[in-house]
Image 1 (tube, rainbow, N blue to C red):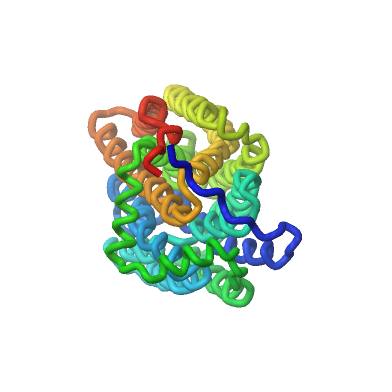
Image 2 (image 1 turned 60 degrees about the horizontal axis):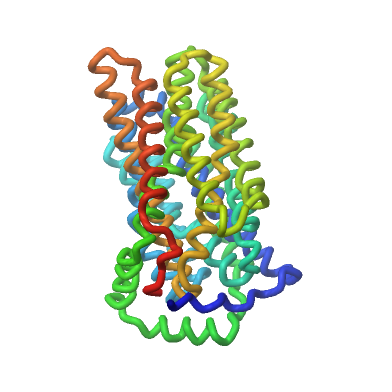
Length: 421
């Protein structure tokens, strides 16, 4: 049996520039978090301005994630061949342009095009953080540091809570895109000024040099090889529903549900979104510190996925305002367990494939978000046409998808079978 080579020795934690660079990279991730959750507060004004139905709203929200997910393969290649700094500095201006196009949109197709550009520009935002952590910080702290990064990046979602709701009510949804674009410019400048990747240990530098001589076709072939490994399918199928369930609620349906079910104002809905975002900041660092290690990690992942499925099912069946306010807050906290799957992926592949493995995982996550938002838009439209309360149908469908993902992750081969590596 061949096992992956041990990861290269990381740079010491005491080197402050490494942490400063990680913080700078995290600002771009925070902006991507803000962009991917704007739909829940912009839904009502966009529906009014462009006469959008639930299905069109789902496509608008999903456009960011379709573009984001589809670009992960190329961003992973870029990071492995060109490095973290060059990849993110090249891509992020596309998000700034998309924000401007969205603010200037005079039609629904322009609005969707703006979301696609934002998704492309934000595509490397979290991937560069995870690869940077894997390359330059201790392997045994990966889950904890990734959890901390997820928590800090989640601050971006705070912008799309009460602050954005207040801004939209005081001005318009267009000003929301202008403000996010301005923050994105600041994040790009911070990365340009601070991020200069530390020298890699000799073994990893040699591997990077060999990768840099690859052709694009060879690089894509290595991505394809990841899908031939028996444990990749289960990882991908669960990745496609876990984060998607949280973002579909927080980023799309929470605001419309509270306003239409219970008559909340936009700012009141924004307050709930803000508290949900705050609890989601606590979750990743908490679960990162509680990481049980490789022996029990996969059981934890399945157990918390099923718990989330149960919460969404209960959430769908109860129409109490207390449940509809408290349920999302609990889901926000529990969503932090997903950091355990990052650690699972980190340990499932050799060190030289870290960038590509994380790219495949992230691609599955965000194509899953796009697919779930698009699908739940269709579900809501079909439910309304049949006289069924649309949010009940949406939340029940999310619960079913989570249960199916947990089942796939359980019955398909795990990374213990990676003898081919």
